[in-house]
Image 1: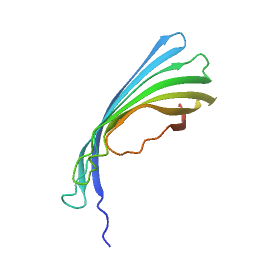
Image 2: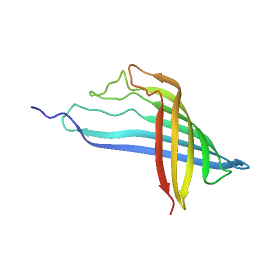
Image 3: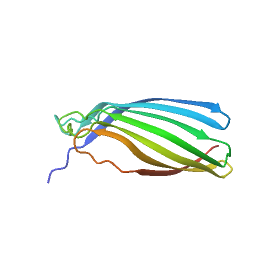
Image 4: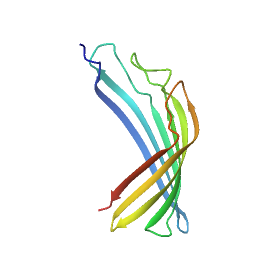
Length: 146
């Protein structure tokens, strides 16, 4: 039995920027832009190349910070992904654009410990070919500030 061809090493470049500003009494706005590109990949077999498509994501949102214990947020998340490349790429089913509306809440548990939760609800999609696409996504997490 032969082993599958695998990527031995890959190098990505990820560049991003974040902006935050108070926009009114108890309201803050933020924006985040990120670009990711795979610049190299080495395969275990010659001629079996693969490189994921470049992607750009943009997030803009507002937070209502009247009560520091409960901070509701609303975000718009946009993602653009280019087609994968190479002999092992599925070039007909990997590109597209999606937009999500993401309401969420951050709660202060104790001291500098916070928990957060978001629902991502798709409001637009233009995917190339046949791709799986979620009806909604939930994310939860925590953070601790030192």
